[in-house]
Image 1 (cartoon, helix red, strand yellow):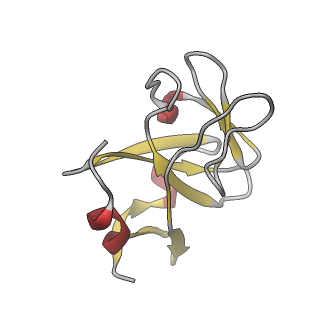
Image 2 (cartoon, one colour):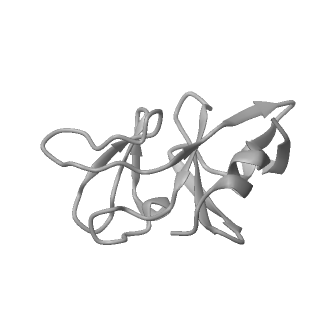
Length: 110
């Protein structure tokens, strides 16, 4: 993998998110209560809601538009909702958030 440094973990509040703009679309980077980071597409498949503005709870995010819930680990919709969001490899090293740059370049345009 080719890792891209996108900033310090402290730049994202607990249970918050930031958006990374790529040539192929926006990626939401989430920070959980346990200082884990997850990266997903920023668009809800239901109505295109900005997931980066959603509520982070545990390892899930709730879309701010219609309350659809997605696993940050797998991207799968939870409960009765159907759908999936793209996920990308992310990790923290020495307080810095790293994303898999190769996966972001391979992503198809939304």
